[in-house]
Length: 313
Picture 1: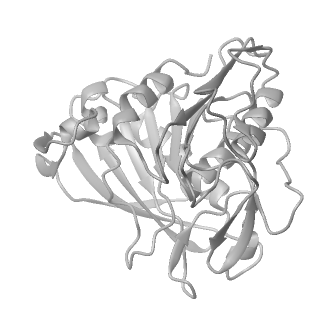
Picture 2 (picture 1 turned 120 degrees about the vertical axis):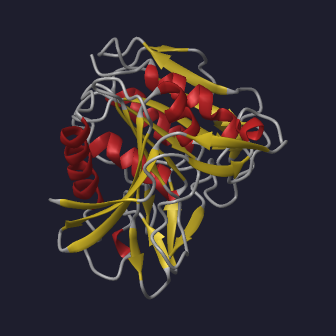
Picture 3 (picture 1 turned 120 degrees about the horizontal axis):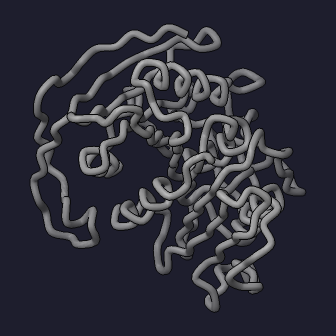
């Protein structure tokens, strides 16, 4: 669908944020972002959709794209402007970053993504076609900025991580790698847990989850709330096993389970699956020890390295 854009800044934007915190300290620094922010809309499935694009200066030909999917938000405006830390990395590594917004449930005031299997959380059934929207947005941005089609990456936090998992299934013909942080692959209105069908294409996955997360508990098929509706969550082990099975991975760094007795297994830091059917693909899970439900900025460099090292073949 055709997009409308408005350039918010064409030269320099100075924002105050903690650069050293981004790189693992708590001190505050001021960083100058050298690119431009573009607020834009497009119509998809009869709904106006919002997104923010950050375009660094001096882009190389055919740059990469990083898409960041927000968590549940109760803002009065589309939640597209939060600094997740990618803008500074975009300046350094010369990729374009886009932050789309989910849809607003006017009854609950929540902006939520229609991840697996959250239709009941929306005012109309089926829920919004977020997969279709994100596919078309990637297509539009690829054409507009001559993106490298082998370097389309999607990250997300919380419900945005759950949507990133769905992107890995629905849009993996376009997306090379996903990084869901604090969000499993499926949430169901009633047990047993249901997992999605096979992905459209092989995709690399790096999952992160805090060991102390009680909002989206990682290990016990616990519950969470979306717009007043209760959903049971797949475990991180079920998510990791889904991706390793779908990618036909055969080599693992450990045979120990990620979860033990309903909590994070203290004997493992995660797992890494290689030897997959597509040799360019691998699947990682990383425990964030002692972390609650949080987006950990100090992990961003490692996340970018994973993206950069996993283009489509």
